[in-house]
Image (cartoon, rainbow, N blue to C red; front, top):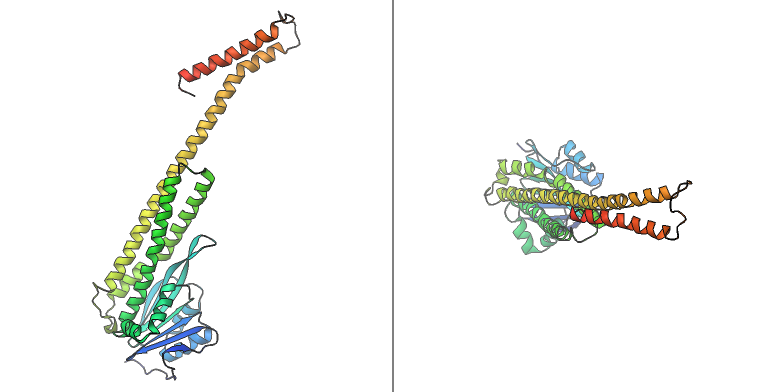
Length: 325
């Protein structure tokens, strides 16, 4: 049997006071949603005492970054979820993980996050309006976390579409742009795709486990709700797999193109060296400090130059016939 909650007076819908964090509390019927941005230790302790969260779960909220997971506290009848979603850093051109911690019980949902996830901010703005609050919270705590996670998953798709556009632009310009710029853009794209895969993949087993839970406050139409969340994450993963294959193909193409260009340049330098070698040999022989026939002849220099140019021309024609230049 669930223990009685420690009672604390709670203000009406809207902002809650706190040491430094931003709190919002919304209530519809018997369901309460408390949203905390940048939670302090005092905030977590207060809510832990009120809702009887397990101390280890409270420590997870306060820790810097936890791996995505789902835990169940059967004694107090609540679920604890840790999930990560990407936030794009414009300066570093890299997606970084932003954590959201969710406690969901029969009559409450408590969320902790750093405020960087726009979908959660939009949901709290929607909940400021009575009609929006009814749509979000008028059914059950299970439906509320479904809407929260759905918004966070849908938020990822525009990021993936932008990645597709950048990949298309890179693919079109790979033969036109200079190699240094192309390599730099490709490296940034590959790093971002790897980061997104690392951030989002651990969420898949969390959502699957959530869909399999048999708490009555989570009883929705799984095919239409929690199953839909699993499908959304699977689609995201499939897109990331496809983008990974594309970036690897572009990298292979760029490596082949760069190697071909280097080989062409090396071939030109080699041919120049081969053409210059006989000329260098003739010049070296004529420059030796020994008596050379016809060295004093007035036409010696022009004849020597003509011979050297003839040798160079003959070698060039030979390479042309062999299709080497």
